[in-house]
Length: 141
Image (cartoon, rainbow, N blue to C red; front, side, top):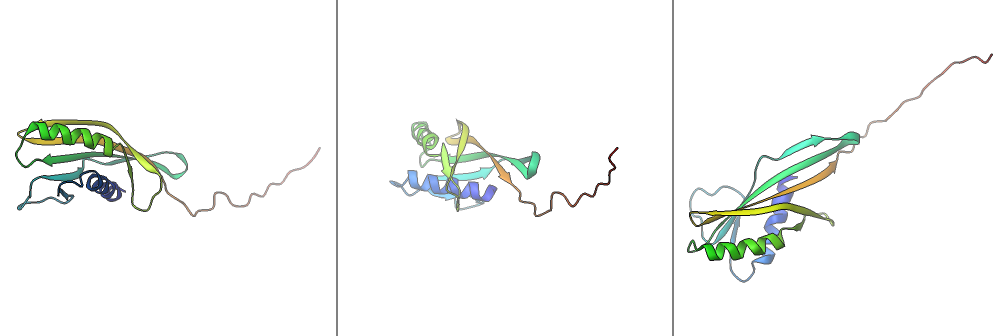
């Protein structure tokens, strides 16, 4: 599920920022980072069990934006566009979008860190029979 969310975010970012060639990295890059670019990562995803095979998957996301020249003005403009384009994303192979909530960002040393959360329920299908046969004996009085 996390990989599908990361792919959905990458697709939304590439659609929004078409006027300039922004690289979008999902894997860690040790060398050769070409600015301007985005680095997308999941931060401590979790799963909580509910009834009937339902699970609430929480996926906090961190997107770092590295501008070409480190200007805060560009970071603020990009953040505003990211809030709009990442509010709803569609996962690969799905029709219904999921909602990105609590968007927020901060800028330190010329790098913007953008945070948001994607929470969704998933249903694990169990092929188990719910109940077998019940035999009951009784007498009437």
